[in-house]
Structure formats: C-alpha cells, structure tokens
Image (cartoon, rainbow, N blue to C red; front, side, top):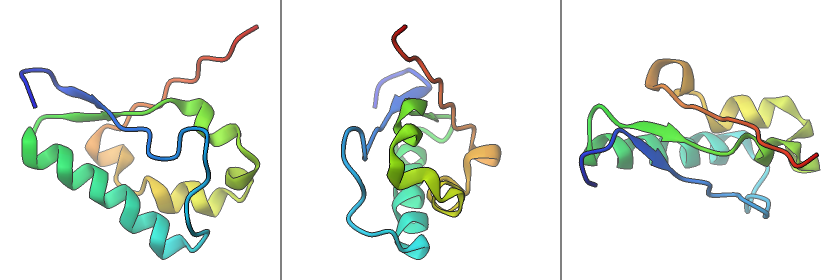
Length: 83
C-alpha cells in the first residue's frame, strides 16, 4: 500500500449500498478498516463526505452503522461541494 498513511475508499460514491440493513452497513465499514489496517496499521481511511448528501443516508442510523470505527480509527470525511 505504499508509504502513505491516507487511503481513499469511496465504496458508495454516486451509488447506494446494496442494502439499507444496518448490520450490512456496519460490516461494509469494518471491511474497509480491516483492509487498510492489514496493509498499514497506521493508515487512515479517507472518504469524501458528500457521499452522505444522498437521500439514502438521510436515516442517520445508516451513517452510524457504516463508519462505527471512525472516531477510533481516524476516518476523515471532508465535504467539498461546488458553489
């Protein structure tokens, strides 16, 4: 994975997940974290925050399920929207 510490993974960029089930979303987020940590234990998950502007994510329990390890692991979700 190189020598960097930030790894971009936008699994649902411009598309909705295959399920709205929170257990599914939790597992999907955990898989990302596990893959990054396997390659670089100091790696950080970087995703684009505008993902969460999709109507799918209006149920905030889905966001909480998708990125449960974010505060501990160090997920960064910058939101850059055009003017």
